[in-house]
Length: 456
Image (cartoon, rainbow, N blue to C red; front, side, top):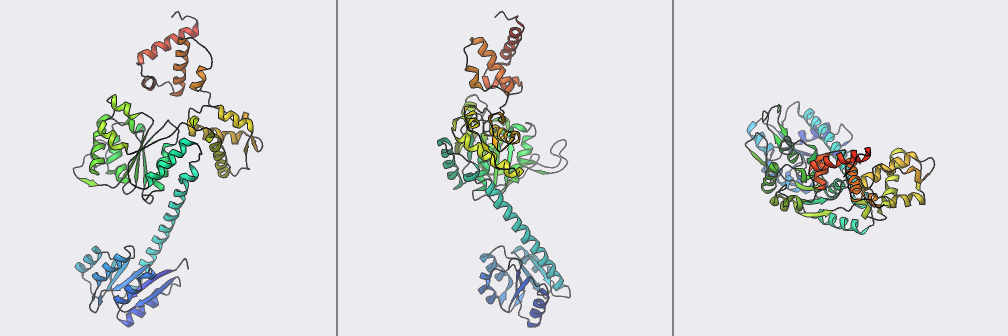
């Protein structure tokens, strides 16, 4: 009986017991079982009541002892103490020991119990909705069905993910942009023992350095200009769950020591605060950078690197996954069909060939975008090669398809990275490990070359 609500009444006053039972049963969804002693109550706990109303005075049986025994059986069963006396100190003591409420026997008792039952029913419905949502989310990130691929590199990834589920070990995920690092992190969280806790993702590269400490650890009111209210940080928000620190390699060096202390002490102090508080958080980090190189270059603390290393998972680039490209293409098409209620689409053989010949610099993320566009562009039930439109940016591999001078190769490489990083000179200099002045000089030479004035 899915909508019923089971109430146990424990009352040694026969008249009062029948009165409570009568009023609670006025709602046909309420099932009531009435007992005279605590012993009877304990013998029937296996029936899993949704609420227990417990008389404070049951002969020699003490209410606080019964509360302890019920809570030892199931800490989630709510217990309402019904007493003939209004004793504030007793009420406070029983509430501390786990009682849900303390009410006095008077003309309002039955109405208060009705309101408690109404409130508890709402909570039950919310819990059921939450559990259902958790199941749906867990299914969404069930990596056995959503992270598809038969290639050997991905089978290694799946094996490591399975190992990560068994403990709370820190996981460090590396791989190129677009390979699915956050999907792996979510897959681990939602399939682990922490799945009922929150998953909180933080992109370290997207937060200004002056705000990241507050973002991670929270701040007290008045901690700095603009801090008008107290704010909890991402670590506190992720308590009893998982915090995912994406692009950890971009964390400012000055804040790395503070993160290290939090990880070592498992305590957080808000910005502007003096008190620390404990946290229980699993940490998963990700980066597209080689942290060993960052450590050697002095941009990343060595002690933090070893603290975060944990279980390393390296995601392969899509162009290293062979026929996974076809498997993923079909998966993305099917997902797009479901979301948009489209008829079934298939890939033409020449479309498969075109996909396998492309290098996918944007990895899985790029493939997903390409296949969704192809589904929209197709006129019938078959996705033809012309429906598959790649980014106009030249893949790096294509730059070497013809013989050129070293200077021309240099121009093409710089042009490639200008397009890839939206003319971010600082980023290009970092990737190519050359100075900004060198890039500006090459740009000047490229302009002269295009204008026919280059003499180098």
